[in-house]
Image (tube, rainbow over all chains, first blue to last red; front, side, top):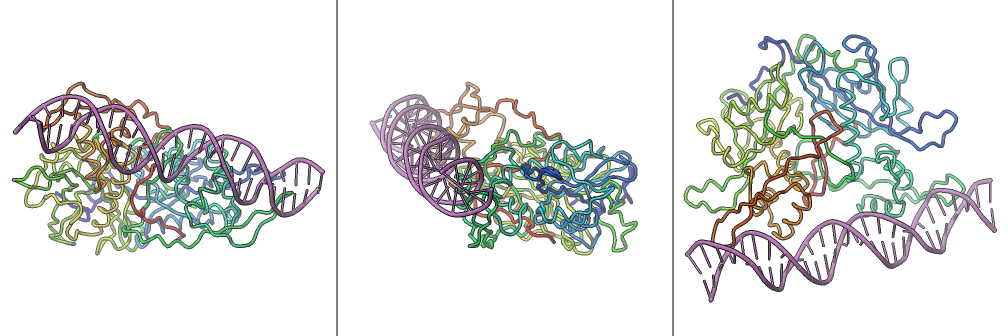
Length: 264
Length: 264
DNA sequence: TCAAAAGTGTTGAAATTACACCCATGT
DNA sequence: ACATGGGTGTAATTTCAACACTTTTGA
């Protein structure tokens, strides 16, 4: 009988098998037009920045940006800070993904990682501190990453793909204003399939929340597109004082990740 | 630049402001027919077991069962263990809920709690070690709990209620076999509204997975109900090697908990 | 034979999908 | 003028919700 808060837990003082360390990492997504220096008019796809490890374990491998949790900062705060320190990026969207704590996920020591996922817009993505130890990768076609980070990215991608269908997160990958076809292109990049422009338009403004700026944007040899923004969200009077987020509608994807099922 | 795994993190050795401790707690749900000793035929509702704290902070208040994470056990393992030690219960379903880490959630020290939620069936619930320091409470009408545990329970309830609509977790609150009206009663208790028996039947067996045992159960002055069980799940060939779970369909509830929104 | 829940059938509304068609612009 | 994407209309399909109706039991 030992309610939480009592626990002296994971600082090694009373656990003979060694301490448990706590880290916070983040999976960052942005849309990029496939790196093409010359050919700019590619269909954009999902990319993410990784950092190169410079010590064991997994020295030299690419990994998610992250770091330790300082005792004066909240979890999301720590995610945003470490993300800013390593990549220079400031996310427009940040949400907790999952806590990963398999015993053997880090060779030698025991690390529990609380992982966040983040979205940045195109302009912000260009501002990233790319260099010797930070580089962008297409979200599919990743190399073998350090630790269990490949699985973590897969899970974050699954969350992104399911959540884009019932929420308005896609806007975090764009600027403040956007055309409907830009927004649709984001959805198409995330879902990896074409969407009917007519039906897409109806869906998004059926949800309300979308308002025309009055301006329009001209881009090619065709009619200019109206610009929209999202209206300030009134409906956030949530009964939940905490910050987490979760479920809702109906993805067209295959299987969700498996829950634990029976007792361990 | 400091990829995770490097971090010496939260064991106080290098953080002047003191250590961060890591705890694992669980919100356990079961269905009970409103404690009525005499009147057995109540509509069942959701209940959960809490443990009484026997030291500061929050001495005397009720709290979620939980405890420290031993370095040799996984997170879900720790949840199941501490849950068994404090309440004697073994869950039929166990899933990670969220990691709570607000700086001020525990007076005096810094505690990050990785919280799981669990479902137990009626028979198991009766087996719980109720006593001076363990007691069942109806999920609505909770007293003021220790720490931020009221908010945590609210969030767990929200997850239960949204998830019951698109998954088959409801079965974890029943035994191996059940009638369709028993299953419907579980849904009704969770969602707190009546469901059309005809449409409910179609919905659940549209999802497949349900098979008649051949037997039936007679309960009152009416036609006996066929017994069903869930077929072994083939479709668990998830692309995700990790264990987490998440989103899908369309709850009839109000607002989901708020995500972080903008950068901290 | 009557009440009550099990189980089946039917119908109208609502949401989803596919696709035809006009509009406004640059070349 | 014409090719191209922006934007609107509409009909077929599917899903969903409500409810009438038949079946089988215990009392």
